[in-house]
Length: 410
Ligand SMILES: Cc1cc2nc3c(=O)[nH]c(=O)nc-3n(C[C@H](O)[C@H](O)[C@H](O)COP(=O)(O)OP(=O)(O)OC[C@H]3O[C@@H](n4cnc5c(N)ncnc54)[C@H](O)[C@@H]3O)c2cc1C
Image (cartoon, rainbow, N blue to C red; front, top):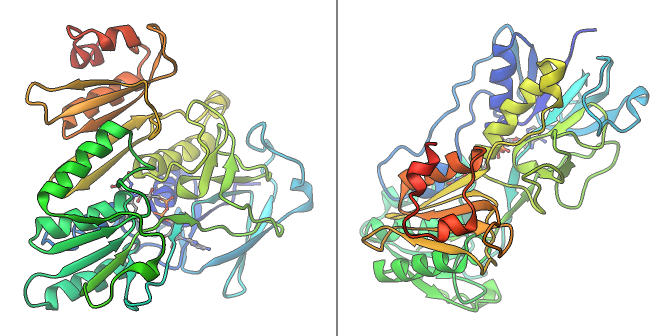
């Protein structure tokens, strides 16, 4: 029988997969209450206080090969024939592997299902700021932008949480002439995201720009009342997970190097997937745009391609960017916030630099990841190098005469 492909979630991973499948002549059904109207998330946290474009729609249209089902999936049941594990690869026979159940009671049988349901923000309550909200979706960003537009004069913005999104909100507020205070659990921001040299440089620059920090805030109850007229929470997010035959994992859908879950006929992509094998296996979802997009493309190739293509693992170099006011920070490949045996290379001005991460301390250790502060062309070089077969050794990176950019073009 013909493949019946159902994609749950029309964010970046699901939309990309649907577009790629249709370009390959394969029909798909895309399930999402907002199918056809979804947009990119990254601009939301960066443009709350300025006039730049914050709403970048994906522009996917339904048609002969793309069917939108504007509904929410509640669970998946597996067909009996599909009970065995498929971690070895896609099913060879395109038989019905299971059924997606929707809120409206409708059911969709599938031969192949892609879970692309993304994440949902944690929503802590701040006792003295009952209107506090995260900025995770378009409706939240629109609410905040309207509030900002209707306010007379500068705002005093409170932000709980000091990860990427919290820092983007606080720094963009200050850049637009507002006051911002970040409440954080530890004593420095971005502790879980970036290595010490990068996060410390950003901490200093954000303080110099006027962002205030209240360290060691262990509970929202400690946040002073009557101080802020806008409060944004940013304390993480967790994958949105639909149970499969009653099974809902504690953290995310674990997938192998081909993005297959342990359930026959079901794959996971983007923020709801946790990669357990392959060169970019990690103990949490990658949760970044380039990975979600690459997962979507990969699965369309994987499920419609030749046998040779179907053998290929997912291996695009993961990367991330975060624009925090005027500061632009990037990561590429495997970087760790706890790494200590890194090598730092500065540009002559000293304001731009890169931190190189290796798989060990020896001079011939392989380069596995790079962080880049305010140096976009060198981030591009890092991505080229990490994607290629000519990675420099630790000894080369340590050599001041070594030209990393030139090497990236070899
Ligand atoms: C504010 C913000 C800023 C960001 N900034 C950056 C950045 O600067 N750089 C970067 O690399 N990454 C950034 N990210 C992360 C990036 O946006 C995500 O990694 C990416 O959107 C993940 O894509 P996805 O398709 O997996 O999930 P999403 O884009 O979250 O899409 C998931 C979709 O699934 C749908 N869905 C969920 N449950 C169901 C269900 N039961 N039934 C049907 N549909 C369902 C949702 O409605 C949603 O449309 C940011 C994220 C946010 C929230």
